[in-house]
Amino acid sequence: METKNYLVAGGTSGIGKEIVKQLLASKHRVFVIARNIPEAALQLEGATYFKADCTDSAVVFPEISEPLHGMVYCPGSINLKPFKNLRDDDFYMDWNVNFLGAVKMLRNYLPALQLSGNASVLFFSTVAVQTGMPFHASVAAAKGAIEGFARAMAAELAPTIRVNVIAPSLTDTPLASRLINHETKLQGAKDRHPLKRIGSPDEIASMATLLLDDRGSWMTGQIIKVDGGISALK
Ligand SMILES: NC(=O)c1ccc[n+]([C@@H]2O[C@H](COP(=O)([O-])OP(=O)(O)OC[C@H]3O[C@@H](n4cnc5c(N)ncnc54)[C@H](OP(=O)(O)O)[C@@H]3O)[C@@H](O)[C@H]2O)c1
Image 1 (cartoon, rainbow, N blue to C red):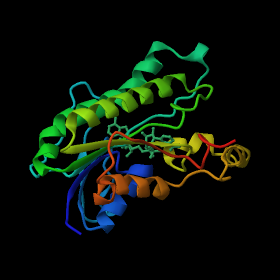
Image 2 (cartoon, rainbow, N blue to C red):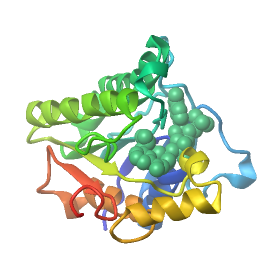
Image 3 (cartoon, rainbow, N blue to C red):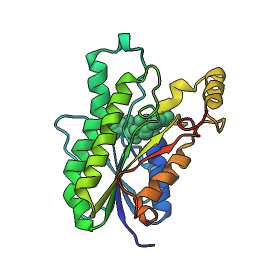
């Protein structure tokens, strides 16, 4: 397989870290962005790490001189509150991390993606956009924006750049830890899914790398649900 260059924002934890591992295993070059860079001993061999906060209004993204064959934006939130407790700040925070950060990153790296002549962009939504779930108003609104943005950009950037979205349900990552940090909560979460378990980061990453490499070469403008069946089955 041809060695390609990929950039993963949020590649130090959870789903993003698994994506980096899988890309490295396929011998690709991987650049990683996060607010905190792991100490040298914990860095994945072959990955290049950069420190940046994608939500910072004055963010300076790392310069990457090579063409980029793919870009993934993983930063996100699970900010669950009843509507009466959601302040404007909640909506702004969720909007910034789930949506605006992704917009800024794509704007910055579009020339490098275009240089490759055939690139794939991947964003993350949540199952709670297409399936209404209580207490998800703020995060669902921000993730809904990324779905609309991705479809519009897929149309605008075809045929050179493909743009897709993965909409996971509950996945075992540090971001979701508060929802599964007790056996009762974890069992409840498993029981809600037709496949009777929650997702693992490598299951989501497997779909991500398919969309990023040539196996996904005829897919663009798609919102792919990877969710243990929760959005489709009773
Ligand atoms: N886990 C789930 O159950 C679930 C369900 C539905 C959707 N999702 C979506 O899937 C995506 C990945 O989630 P995850 O569970 O893997 O999250 P995670 O474990 O919290 O990892 C998030 C990654 O993003 C980085 N990050 C966060 N804010 C950032 C910022 N402002 N600038 C740069 N990097 C930032 C984090 O590193 P630093 O903190 O060092 O910056 C970390 O590497 C998210 O968009 C999430 O909304 C997850």
